Amino acid sequence: MQNEFDKFLRQIEGTRKFLEVPENIYRQLLSVKRFLEVSIPVMMDSGEVKVFTGYRSQYNDARGPFKGGIRFHQNVNIGEVKALSAWMAFKCAVVDIPLGGGKGGIIVNPKELSSGELERLSRGYVRSVSDIIGDRVDIPAPDVNTDGRIMSWMLDEYETIRRHHEAGVITGKPLSLGGSKARSYSTAQGGFYVIDSAAKKMGIEKGATVAIQGFGNAGRNIAFIMQKAGYKIISVSDSKGVIENKEGLDIADVAKYKDEKGTLLGYPKAKDIASAEQLAEEVDIFIPAALENSVTEKDAQTLKTKLVAELANGPVTPEADAVFEKNNVTVLPDILTNAGGVVVSYFEQVQNAYGYYWEEKEALQKLETIMRTAFEEVWKIRTEKKTTARNAAYIIALSRISEAMMARGRG
Image (cartoon, rainbow, N blue to C red):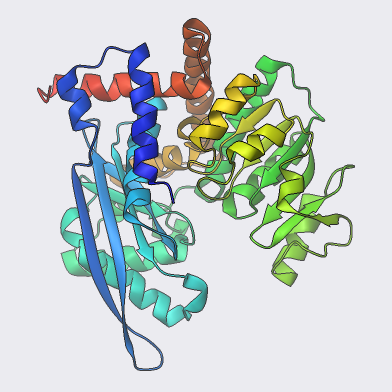
């Protein structure tokens, strides 16, 4: 399996030809600032103690505290967590919010745990990393297979250890514990603002066809949002398979079926197709919203689309990226497209710090301004430099991180 951090390093190396980065700065960006591996003993319901491995990576904090989610997944590994922490630093920089990059993970299949086991694991993780997180140090958040309930347990454990309230130490919390309105669907909503902006630039009209890979939080929400805005969703997928209806899917009905059956397969108003068939579809917009490396070089050669929008982290491999560039397919990079989640997490921190909370409309207005502004900046650099949107986003982010490091005398 490709080391995800090596993939990140290839991306920043490719950016250097567009931007003069001092060698001393560049060398520091080739490794994470701090990496912690922990063992988490958990009493299982059976009475057996099982030991889980967890990680926290802190890549760069020149622009502000480390920030990044915690994922629970059986395939979590060191290279992935390091890469995600680096991408988070670049993501925060490209949308110009004052945060750095961090990430955490536990090697576990949470579907195999009871609610009690999941809570004990979540609290154990926080006990293990409590010395290196804090609202002015490193702020975790939800990611793959984690949610507001898990963040609540983690917040409670941290505050129990510290013996004071510190709501801003964790974002993605329920509203009752200081969460921000719009946070639950902010990744998809932010992604929509970017996709919609690109569609207007490219002359893609409303009613355009859309295929979505993944039907978790981000995939499901982007499907709802895109359909409401007038786009036609013709296929969606989950871990078990793909459903397709060329006339358009009713996403509310699809979501109801998925919740009842636990799968998309067998949905009566669509046909089941193979993953390879979805990746060979002819659609105006393709949205990978699942996991890393889900769009390969072979997929890029067969997929017939005008626009790929990375709602997942790192879904397009470098080899696939090269094919898309050769075929004049626009790829909206993850560090721009899925930044809506961290933007509203930042809003949550601000609200926690002030003890003053915004209405949903206000949060969405602020999110739209940030995301559409970031898109315009990326598109401008893309046009000026005659390069890809990914390179343009990295140019902006690398410039801002480098500038902050130089200002601190780290160069």
